[in-house]
Length: 421
Length: 165
Ligand code: SF4
Image 1 (spheres, rainbow over the protein chains, first blue to last red):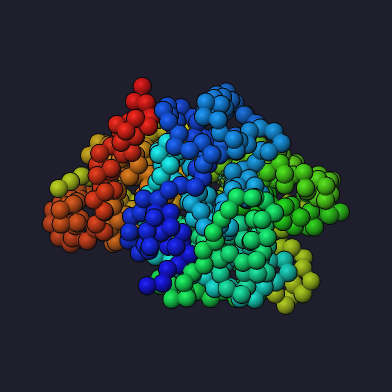
Image 2: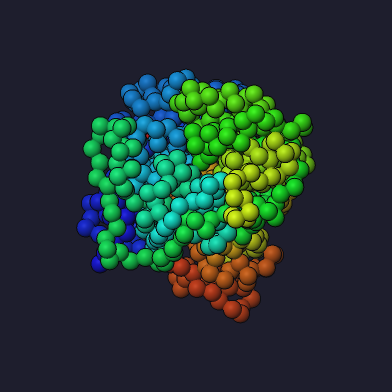
């Protein structure tokens, strides 16, 4: 019987010919990524052996540089672990710092056909690289690091077959919100993305979508490997890898065709995404006090470019705080070089160092009681970015930038706006 | 057979609600105390060990934070939901919280009712009798870890981590 991409990767990692939905598989882990939150006292356990230090990376991201004593102590514990076991792939505060999923992308850590785990739900981001990547819990990370293995439940796969190209002014975030609005939760399923429309999506766009799959509730979200991906990986790593393609007779729980040309900007309304999205037109006019562009999903160079295009020669409205957090220091440097950072700052944005920061209400941009924020980050759950009474809308980085200028939720002026409205 | 009083929740209950971000860097006890504090203040104090939690679709969606451990620490005898998010289910296994998928339970279970859960016949329903729903059987290998205190005891026995101390 034919297999999907994820089934083939998991079968290989389990040393089996094939796997079937419903199977529990014990697999070898190719890369276990520890983050700063793993080293807090309530999360960490004293490790006595590490199966393979070269299959472990340590990336500090949620609270960097340390905003308080607790974070500073967690970073110290992490550094001691790195030292003891001779971990080489380390991204501490400094030049190589960034949100784990962004660093995994730009360093080519999420190899096609490989298995990657990290204690963060958006680990599925690396699925954009044809990698079996999934968020796991703290104990699972300690198991992966110490034994080199973990388990997965093989779920049935839903395939998205993409055709066409996204209209101007419509971003990968909108594609995600569109699919969330059309299909809701994908709990207990994997997602596979492919089709002729894939070629039009750049790597940042693919990663935005793969990252947001966590919000659809799916297990793995794996993309087909095409030439663009192979070129991207080869420019970043010498490590060998074996991409996996779906068998022609692979069995899917469902096959869903998406015409990218039909996608329109959408907004998620406060407190949840699933079953709670609206067209941009329905959301415009809502006054805001904060606008946030950032996170593993939408702190990419693409996002900073989109925001800079909207903000060029304009000013953030009085009474609005626009906070921009690049997803990695490398993205930050590149955006500096291209002039995006100057444009954003001239407009009145506060550009922070790369970190999770405001996305999870950790630091640098929390909301107070009763405030309204529009964000291009990953989640709008109640209390996520600060006070539980704050309201969080979610949209593309372009819409967030346009809203910051308007002082209320606003659309991006695009050519042919009438035609696409 | 497990019987307990129900705390009932709806669809898409996320882990930010179960365990708010502001306790992320605090002690396990502080995390447990803050369970559901944004939507049900006082939940952790009112919850009695042996009680049962029910939910609708996609329970535990969101962050991979150790929210399942807080429910285990409160003494939750069993979590049942129409469907459970994949990462959250892993955490239930790894932290040792009995959690099962039982389509229809979200609509059936009423706050405060006594619910009985039978892992022999894989059925759940009101303790008083009446409608019984099928539970999706949990593979033996996972059930063993769920009921045996999670993965840390296993790793301690195999010498991969030091005993908790
Ligand atoms: S940026 Fe936000 S969603 Fe992404 S890893 Fe950090 S906290 Fe999680």
